[in-house]
Length: 362
Image (cartoon, rainbow, N blue to C red; front, side, top):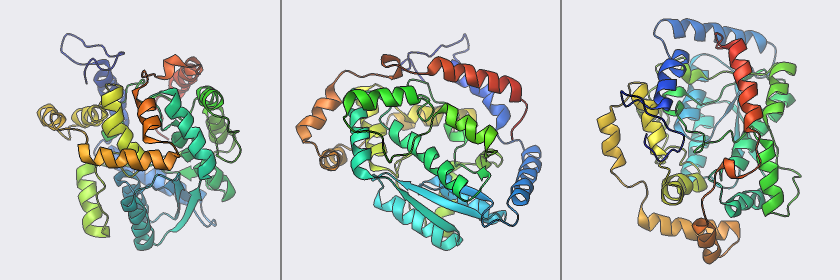
């Protein structure tokens, strides 16, 4: 991590506040040999008991990426009966689609494809592009949990098993990854200001709805990858060797727009190299060394020729000219702080929640 994050603070040892938070708080919620296995077995038993006499005992969102595919594999290994769901926002790569189909076929689980209305979603995401906010993926980040909870309610499923994990995602500065699926105030403001599309069919979420599902509907989110010694590189190799899974490149690069945004736009326009967050998390979880991470950061985050092709594709997909795309990419960079938002409310709610449930992992 470095001072490209405006909120970063270093102590006398050279440790930044993000790493310090990881080591003192987040590390307590990651895998502990001997203890985590027992906790996970208890969780599995509870999921099976709650789902007894139902078609499914849990639901797993699957993107075609390493984390979600490995989570689906764990369900098979532990004898769970998940419903797999993929939310299609129109930006899937061919490899990610193939990976999803491969995992569904070889695991033998039921599968739902939740397809967004592209015309409406395009206008919503285009509004975020026009606004110049770094969180271009906020519409997707909101639609994914909204779709998953909607399907969970439909099938009376009480457990959601995301592929998120702390070993590769424990560190993410707020200005690089704001509370994107929780802040409906920010979301609605940008859609209203930069588009003329009404919110009709695209599902929405937000912090209030999250707590409604959690406390009134009794739906729990369990992150299996935090209960095992999860190593992303080893998991990737395992999936390739055992399922015929194909590698798609960098983190979240199973989506064409995400790959373009994180590898090219964020470092060029916003001076935010997303790789730093992943490497910092892996350093804190002892998966790689700082020296290895620094060496990897010396490599370019994108391929110049591929970016040219991506720009042509993305402009056409959005229904705008290349000149318009370049204009939007060249406007002054902004983050959530430049727009009306619910940061204070979200921070208060989570501080209160963490204080009450700080000793509980379930």
